[in-house]
Length: 93
Image (cartoon, rainbow, N blue to C red; front, side, top):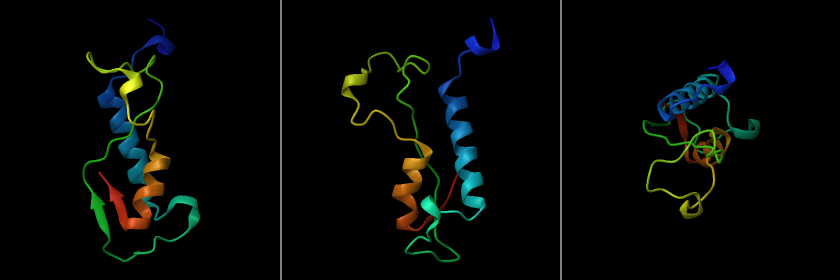
């Protein structure tokens, strides 16, 4: 199997996304470069995040789930930042 044909598990995808988000948060960046409204030295930590791609061909859904039943097709780390930062979430893990 060629490297490009290897399947990536959901666990691996989530781990990569969490590491990316953690790195972003550790750098003290907010979405779009603006400071969060409730930016404090403490802030909130979201210990359980879900991000996903719309690429269900590469990352198939679990049996019994259908793409057309998903509320939204994807929720990327960038979309997570846009929602969480204004609420004072400063880190993800």
